[in-house]
Image (cartoon, rainbow, N blue to C red; front, side, top):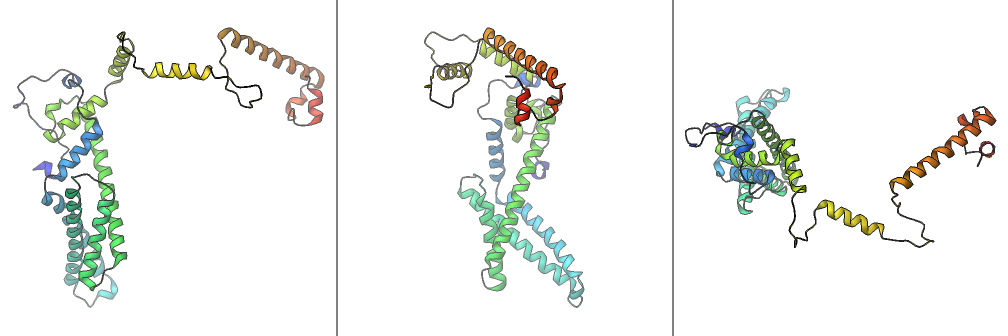
Length: 305
């Protein structure tokens, strides 16, 4: 029953797991999982919605009742409400907000079921607008689009915040289980596939480095013509180096130099800079260095070519 309110729990399936646990948690992962972590997270949310309408509507109705109780208590304690029955004011607000929450969550669940349990941003917005408009029509006899828009935006914000918090709590929970080396079979059954994908996508740096080195040293067959990333970059670089531009073309790609030519160019630049600095210091006692060089004709006259 604890998973009904908080699914981030660890189980105790040692009695059901016949094989002994591996010494390392990564040794029990096995082959690469079918889905990555984010796909398994979407499947986890889909399974949560598949539990039924009561499981997904009751929390929203309880939250609406609690919000209505707080709002009704605040309204009943205001000064201009002193001659009205306080329990009646509280009951009115509790009933109104609970009715809006019930209608909104029920429509949201219906939209999710009709779309094959695929979540999207427009579903809570439409559900909130339907709930606000339906309650305004039953309360005042006319459809209030402004109230529906406000309820839709508020319900969408609540859903987005809830999903963000659940994903963040899921990452924190799985990271903690990874750090304490919790085996996969010790996690709750509804989180085992998600935990396995998380472990496979977040392997230690040492394992990732070993896999990368192994892939780089892997010999190819004679008829294998596929390109990896390094071969592709090398081919693109050779193709770009073979492009020649005419003399009148203003833009040119920098031509790479070999080690000998690069060393010679660097020595020439250093020698030219040293000769220019020596000439400036000899003729002007170094004052030209502090007078914005090469910006005025007077300064350019002191700088040798």
